[in-house]
Amino acid sequence: MGDADKRALWDRKYEGGLPSLTKPDPYFVRAYERFVDPSFPHVGRALDLAAGLGRHALWLAERRWRVSAVDVSEVALGKLRQSADEIKVDIDLVAVDAADYTFELAGFDLIVLYYHLDRRLFPKIVSTMSPGALLICKLSVEWGSESVSARDNFKPLARNELLALVPELQIIDHHERPVRNRGVVEFVGRKPESEKSSPETPVGL
Image 1 (cartoon, rainbow, N blue to C red):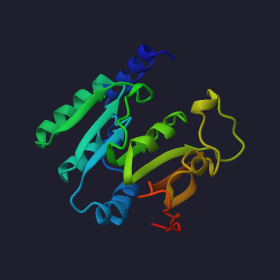
Image 2: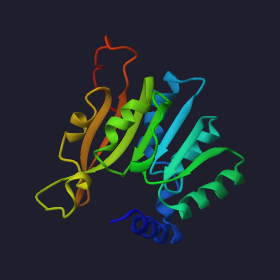
Image 3: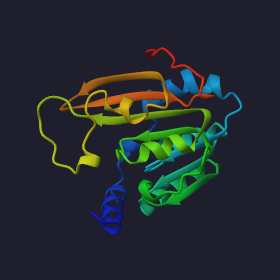
Image 4: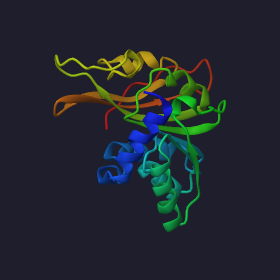
């Protein structure tokens, strides 16, 4: 699917509303309160990749984070701009596919990635994380024996595959579970402050 087709597809979906994507995900909120807030009491810069309607970008901006939101759908970003204006927060909106986004080296303290899997993104994500930065992500995982028809790079993750995609990060929280007819992985990782930093012991939420 080309960029124009992908943009048109998501524009149609977001024109329909997608009300389930307007409230912050409970895992994101718990992870923020437990891991992000203690690490960044004075907040910082955040990047919301494939932000959609911006449920997490808006939540962070309300807490004074400087947020960049990236999404291929101009319809979604238009609605996000309207929501930001209503609550009087500023968000840097970038209308581009995440694969084409120019990642700033060590530019962000927090990365949010929800249900957008492109395996080629992970080295770029790690590169744009500043020392000590956190990644919060939730992605689909293959569960059971059902076959998935998708190109290799966009197939749901195999179990424990995410850990292999971000070997540079310390594991702060990681668990996988079935949800209806599929699975999800919920993950928080930290970029070490230095090369000598040792991995942390995973903890649960």
